Image 1 (cartoon, rainbow, N blue to C red):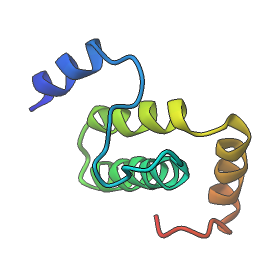
Image 2 (cartoon, rainbow, N blue to C red; image 1 turned 120 degrees about the horizontal axis):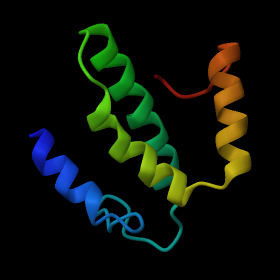
Image 3 (tube, helix red, strand yellow; image 1 turned 180 degrees about the vertical axis):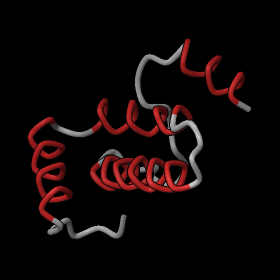
Length: 86
């Protein structure tokens, strides 16, 4: 499993097409990948496993989301006021 992810990440250039978000507006895609990254990290950390597979979500949301949004969300996560369920 980890080998497959590493191979995909090697050729990674930008966020791939996601059939869940077929429209031009990628705001929901950005937000969903941000949530998925934090959920993945939290779940794997709780099990004591390596969080490297979660890097995929981080790369996708960093390529889709404006930096100002990510900084704002990171602050909200630290404050405990983030609106999403992580």
